[in-house]
Image 1 (cartoon, each protein chain N blue to C red):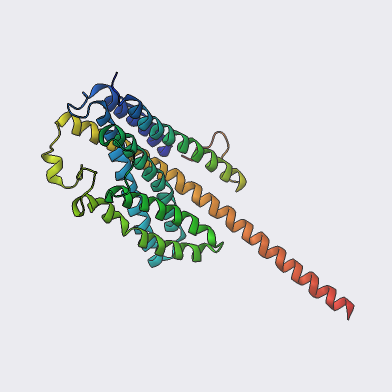
Image 2 (spheres, rainbow over the protein chains, first blue to last red; image 1 turned 180 degrees about the vertical axis):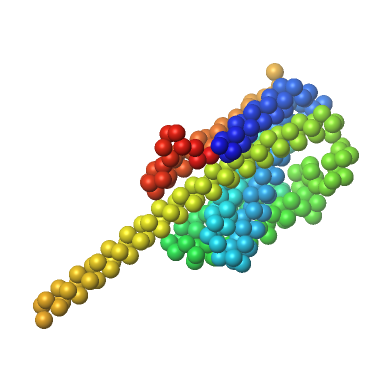
Length: 245
Length: 48
């Protein structure tokens, strides 16, 4: 019941924050309507970071405790993170074309490292399919998740470390939130979408975790059936051999 | 009409649409997995 309430709250919050960002907040003086994409681009990027951070932490937790529930958390966060990374890239491209004149530029460090982040976590999800053994899979995936997480700070700080088309961090430090360069109405609209998307992320995480747990039970049942069938076949073969002697 | 409007619509549309599609697919996958695992709740039972 609580998860259903959370889902309803997420739906209402996303709807309200979206209406505010799209129709109520005034357009930016310089960028015009194009700047409205920021309200959905930045939260998508934030949730990608959060998801992959959770994947890395859950991976560490698994390596320490060997509890498969932590692997379910890591898998759930990685899948949802891939979706939000794709959203961040898509939103960035739709913002880039009217503002920069190009959808994409490979020379830009933020764009390229974000594309790498997407590739790394799609690879993480594919890598998980290489083995049927749940503990072996969880341990290997935890290591891959930790290695891939190295790209998160590189993506975030790429705009400060190297020059490129991409602007500096929108939300980089508490000081920038308390003393923003943009008007307060823009900042509150951005924080509203960010909050609403984060609630939606929490609901998705819970549901994806439940799915991972249900799939693990199915996988376990299938493995037991296979083992039982193999045992029966071995016994039958032994009996047949006995009978022929 | 602003020249950027199609990009705003495409940007927001794909992201909100994608989010909704993922949520619906997730709920369907969850229901199917629970049915297959034999732990599908009865209609009166709430698993939320």
